[in-house]
Image 1: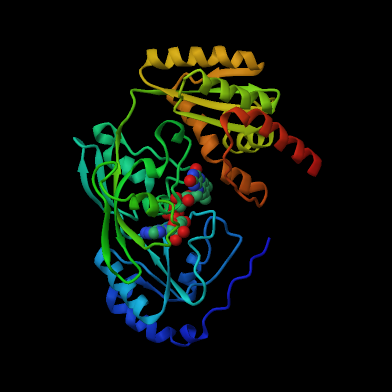
Image 2: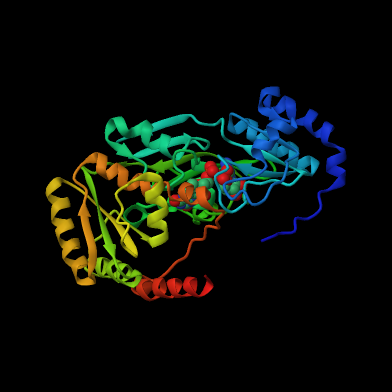
Length: 375
Ligand SMILES: Cc1cc2nc3c(=O)[nH]c(=O)nc-3n(C[C@H](O)[C@H](O)[C@H](O)COP(=O)(O)OP(=O)(O)OC[C@H]3O[C@@H](n4cnc5c(N)ncnc54)[C@H](O)[C@@H]3O)c2cc1C
């Protein structure tokens, strides 16, 4: 796969030293990355297929600094690419040689926690997992959970409208975002949304969320925090046919049960992740579902019993319900390290698809047939 990047603007390259001199006083010398060695850390993202060395990297600490940098770049015709942790799989955080990267990784402060109204106000460079870490002492958490949550920032999550395994019940970023501070391309600072869901006026927040950094720099965000459930338990169900796994998902949803997560893996994914994580996945299965429910012990038991009864209609090769925290953690460790485990054996391209629930079985069967043809 190759992509042709436009040629860099020679005028900007020739003015590099002047531009650096203009940026330095706005953020201080410590926050301006200019050496080739240090810029190399920013030349790619989680996709890794493309590399481009940015003109420079600016790492501001406040909205005011971001605004000053944007105003300078706007006035001097310098292009800016925003960046969080650089875990994106779409190349969006990579800048060309004539553009600067504006990274928010130093902006990690928690600004306000409001447990009564269930909100957290944070700087946008805070990692996804650190938001839950900041509120867990009161029994709260931040729901969207991309597998990269240890590293990725809420800024990147907003730009990509990220979600994770638990989006089945809790939604993705857009469903948990209430407001942002956005620095526009000319340095103007605007507040969008507010501190509760569905603010009055046009849904500009919905426009910003998922806009891949093209509308401005998000410097602060107000997100919804939720009270953590009493407990959660995953079950592993193995199947001898991929379409049975897909049909089982459709049947669970059709029965009105909303597990907190349902994750699917085919045989190759099971073997690759099991080799890496020893999570106890069924090596003999063609496909596997991780189905997690949450609530009190009694609620989990009741929901799992209903799910098990439904799964039995689809000829499962194994059903295993987690019996301990350690077992549950191992099950999720396997799923969450699936990318890394795959990367150990091969390059890969990651794509997301949307399939109507009722079509899961046939679509998975067709994907399997196409793969067999391609081998
Ligand atoms: C191992 C692995 C697992 C992953 N799992 C998931 C997953 O389960 N679900 C999922 O959705 N994604 C997943 N991803 C993709 C990635 O982690 C997410 O897209 C994440 O939200 C990116 O966050 P980041 O901080 O790394 O952003 P970056 O990669 O730094 O940037 C991503 C985009 O956001 C823009 N951006 C960054 N900061 C700002 C800002 N302050 N203002 C405006 N725009 C900005 C950038 O320009 C870029 O377009 C995974 C990636 C990896 C490597």
